[in-house]
Image (cartoon, rainbow over all chains, first blue to last red; front, side, top):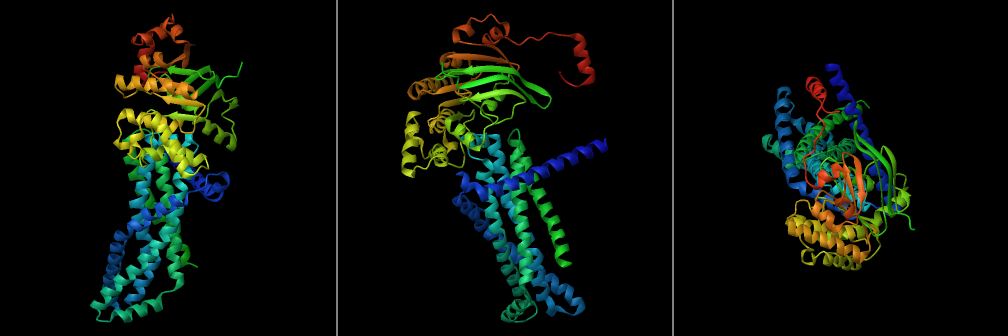
Length: 261
Length: 266
């Protein structure tokens, strides 16, 4: 019983992974070769998704990254006080925001905001035969629905991560300067001094991997919808849960390799 | 004699282990309206999806415009797609676009015409289906009959040689359904299209068909003119025409076996 369940679960997992890989290859194929087959990936669609996924998320991302920065500063000062090393708070802040928190928070926010929306959109289109309609018109659904999103998320996630780096560090500095009675300028200079390109890039690389995960998990769950509207809901939930899980696992693997270089 | 537009030979297809189509053969001639008629679960939707090239067949051959649609290369497939139009059961309009944008999309994707020409051509098709006022509406703002007509406009915008229509009268009141039937006939006469209409609506089928194929449990029971079908002696065709309840032979042993094993009907 347990064995057959496990077997079923495993074969399901493998076929889903295979499907995701095929989706990735197919959307890359259209991005590169689409224009030679008079099925170019629409630049307008890419910009549309960049605004929808990136620009429209700026308010929530601003609030979250400022808050995370403040939270990290509070925690840092609290912990470092035990060692009498509160003055090192900026170092901890700069490293943890750029290498860990900014990419992770952006990944989670975009997965929740846009990954789920992507699943819902494609799932609904599947239910209402819009995907079939695209195919009979001669529009490849992957080229039309997946490729522009992949490009948009891939460009926007690092940009948003960089934005969150700046705001997160700023939030932490503002809190630390009031708590430890130092001027903001001094801390900003200190942060700039401590920041290395490597740390920032470390976070940006991660966010690019997260971008691929969010897009592929979102669209694959949408395309796998069969049946009715209820399943769109299930697929949307599944998409968010899986995307966030994969992001955190990928994050751990990434951190392991990059901190052992 | 010119070869048929559609020729299906011995089409067999499975859904999992369940055989959906059990050797279907049919032909559609140039300019003809073929109605595929059958009840729920008869396999008519599956047959339509095969004709549209949306599913791979288990065995058998489907030739449309003289080419096997299972083995088209990329260029041939694009050519095939340009020459067919499909109006789906629920319309399948893209909900994020206006009616006008929906109708323009195939032209934008397949032609290199400028926007102005595309707009005029799509408006002409909207005029043909009496929707010229609704160009800027979203699909959610349309009534059931308007959605079907908008879907029809999108299906014919490329002037296809072959038009597929899935359940034109489903979900419509009898008057609107009759109007749509009329529109289908007018279109055929105006644009000399070959059509395949899938329906379970008898009135509609008799109204528009040149030829009717009666499909039941994955088999074509009979294929012929409206008169032939009406006068058919075939008991299952008669049952379908007279809306009789399907009677299956009752086998007590098999029934008991089914209850005991719980494996369902074989």
